[in-house]
Amino acid sequence: MTSETADYFISYTAADASWAAWTNDVLEEAGYRTVVQMLDFTAGGNFVTDMDDALRSAGRIILILTPAFFESGMTKAEWTTVFRKDPDGARRLIVPVMVKPTEVEGLLGPRTRISLVGLDEHTARGRLLDGLRPARSRPRPPAPFPGAG
Image (cartoon, rainbow, N blue to C red; front, side, top):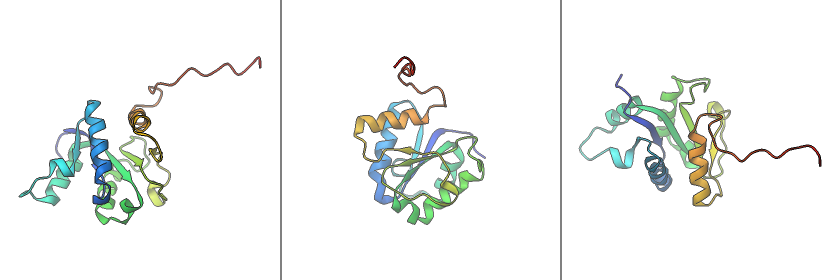
């Protein structure tokens, strides 16, 4: 197994390439290292070995969830490869990011996801980056005092 060279592998279908590109840009601007097919797999390479190397070298996988994502056999092969390493989600290796209303069933159903559905760009950027932070490290406004009122 190769050593970790990227923080995130971004899994998507061709129909959602614009979401993958935007997600990649947001993550790279925030200092994360990414692997994404459109930028890292080049002509003349071997797609299967490139995919295997990318999945082995990335610490986590981001799934760009849309209905098209679940129609693709390739995206299923990608996330199930990572699922074997983290079947109960304790390591948070699979990060579902919903960008279109999508029914999520089966083994991915109970995974907590980041929803960007219907958000403007600024809010979506913040939601994505906040969702990638470890629990209790995300900024939030102080909770109002619930008494005396």
